[in-house]
Image 1: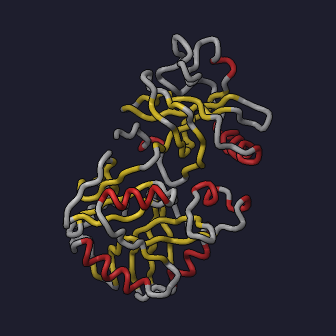
Image 2: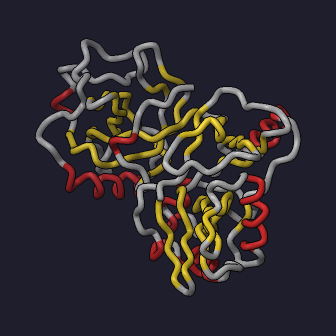
Image 3: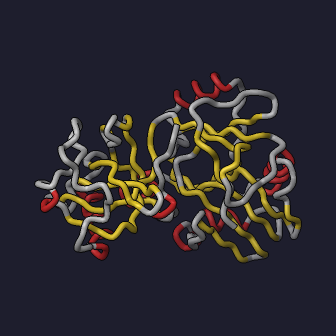
Length: 312
């Protein structure tokens, strides 16, 4: 089953029908328990069970013989602060724990719950979680303004708003679930890189518009030497003989240095567009480039062809 997705908005809806939750900065996944057997499946149906043994162990303690739980794998520090980079590079962040925040219950002991109201599913979910170690994504109290202020004050990524009586629509972006990002970030596809002392000086990233991969900008910030080497190792098997971006080269370099001109093309190493990365940035420029882009991590739970320019 493909998880239900949320639409991006620039303003949270308000009213008694809406509930708010933290938007966690992690990997979306389904926990599937069938007796003593547990699986963790990513949103593109990759098996993550062996990668997160502590989450699998907690799932075996759920208060149900069979269950499907929707949520997110998150790396958190001792204060509960999440970090996507810590999730990506666990050896470099030894103080972080891997946990699973659950926010929905889709099946319970043979009963399909997706047509039940969200509020009913979450009431059952809280009982199923018990003291298993799988964490409950609690509702955030207050008005939209108060919730945004609280989440921003904690340095968290954003807020999800859901209609309390909505059903679960697998594989769709429904208006019943919407998300507000408090900083600008999204996934991009890597189409090449400029080599550097530690393998990668800058990633060349883009997004799909129909069948075309469109160049969005260079990403130089957000790396450590260790991460540059790790990313370079992932890109090695993807080396390609030609540029995959439909809109390169450009006539001139952009104001913020994000463009690639014909003269600069030979400096780049091109790769097959198969690696997806998460990038934070300040804004889109007038010529559709990323301004002040920073690398956050590799996304192994997203198909390259699903990466489009997110609208806000």
